Image (cartoon, rainbow, N blue to C red; front, side, top):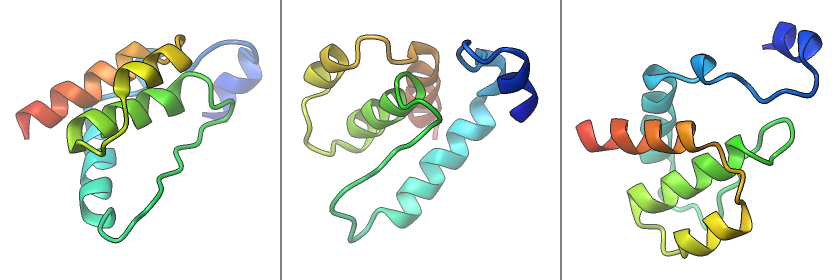
Length: 93
């Protein structure tokens, strides 16, 4: 949210602002819209923590064919909370 960015311009989005409902929406949207897609662009404000977490999780969950371990090495600071939440929600649905 804008208020958080204004108050804390150099801080990562707190984990409390990403939840299982958002994770489920991401998974549902991807499931519904992925057919025919050749590439996936995941974008957030800085693209340093949240975006890689979502991309790596989607790669793992939907077996997109990329090397997740290499992705994790390339993006060492990916947001592990977001990654874990997406994986946990995917395992339940």
